[in-house]
Image (cartoon, rainbow, N blue to C red):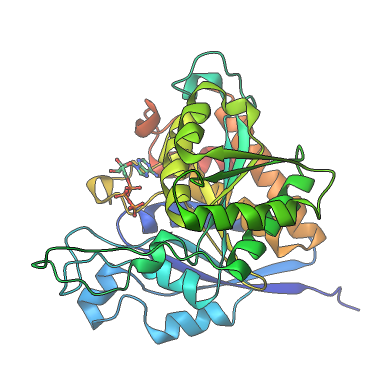
Length: 354
Ligand code: ATP
């Protein structure tokens, strides 16, 4: 009798700029790690999305791509958007935000891990010394104002910070569950000394914290969080915050561990998830073969973990360990981190270390 094979359908959206460059390497890593796993298969289906697709067909997120995402087990995304390609009203295209809202991917999970002391601009942190996750609310907050129409010639514009009880409860609960798997500390990042919406967010946090008596719950204002991230990043375990604060702090946090090319992410909902590097399309280096693929490769590891099968989780650990092995040698870096490896050479190194 043939052994049962579980097939996972993965929708792949390489997107714009360096998206295709880094996705290519991540898929090579996925293919290579699969060879060592038993009983699982990956059926990857690629779809064109993003600013380039808009130029071709008038829609950056075609219905066929959206439907493929809906019917897959997970989505792997490169990057979307190009600064020169905008909607008629001047706004940049951000189909990745449309996907988050369409599928209610409320928890933006952004792990920050320092592999090697040379890669941090901070002194005194060894590999592993910076190890925390930011959980960014990804369906509301200040980003909920993004589709509002404004009059650029008027005298006033407003953006609304939308914080709902249901939206806050689910993301805060997610953060606590994440902390249960880690060092059991959750830091709420808010601005409740100034904004009523943040007083509300904090009161929801306080309520959820009671459900997790084993987890230490602390509260920090966002401005102080920016300071503490620089002067004591090792303190943090899981940070939870609203959409815009999370957007800003996750770039700061990526800077602590070597830059955007090192920061993976998962946009996670109750039954659907999209994995992508935290960086954007970086058009300045697109197609030059120099983009750092590590963030996307680590996003594949997150995807394997999230798929939740015993073998995919084993695959996640194998990929993460391979990245650890490569990063333990400071001479193996792409140009963004002062090295000379090309995107595909970095992919080769990780595959070699699997
Ligand atoms: P977004 O707003 O979509 O997040 P952004 O315009 O803020 O995008 P990114 O596209 O993330 O910014 O890139 C900012 C800069 O960081 C790029 O110009 C590029 O030089 C660098 N960068 C980002 N990702 C990588 C990567 N994977 N490898 C090397 N450099 C990168």
